[in-house]
Length: 305
Image (cartoon, rainbow, N blue to C red):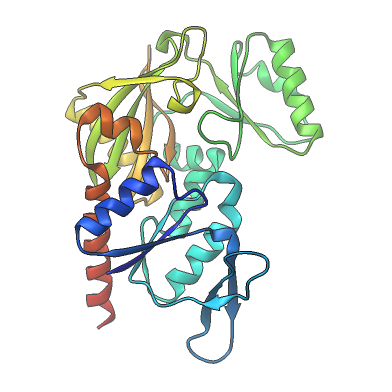
């Protein structure tokens, strides 16, 4: 197959591993920056054209047909990346993941709403309108409080406010800057750790426990966290599967946190990193993703016949 990865940083570990896995299966993979695409709509077939401009001096050229697409762009490229993804979907190209589930997962509040609708437990969370007072809202969940921008990733845009006064000040500052913020209960008993479940094609294929550096409440690997293998019960794995299915994702990194109330879902990542979980588990997760994309592309082709 001829595959396309949408990614701004081809040298990243995850991108390189996916490219290696694709080539080991006999596929060709291009890696292109979604922000360098030019999309065209027309009244004449094929209706959806995609052009690519490799640099500002070059002329955009019409891209060839691809059999399947892997979205691996960061949160800063969500709008354009999903516009490109929608173009490919409209052309009948298999995508890992589809655009609507991808968008749901990228919006932290929207994804939490969907999870709760499906009976999945999450930390107590608030989203307040710009005309509300932060102080009164924060009293509904207490202190300390986790504050999250709605589209952050890799631990960026996540703040721990130790007191209600500091939380109020941060929320008011962000709201004044036009940045919506999600307020969330701080789970102190988790001690700065969480569990990452990697889901591919309806199966939990790998798990790891992530622990933050001393004095760091975020367990993200990009914030200096470490990972080690952890074994989950079938019931615990089912929580990750249900969360992934609720959002409609093919591939997801589901972050779970242990609380006195039981296992809670922190968030669901539609473009989870591979480096730490491959090294921790010893599994070829990139290959599992490519094999699932093969199956999805083949099923899409049969349906179109």
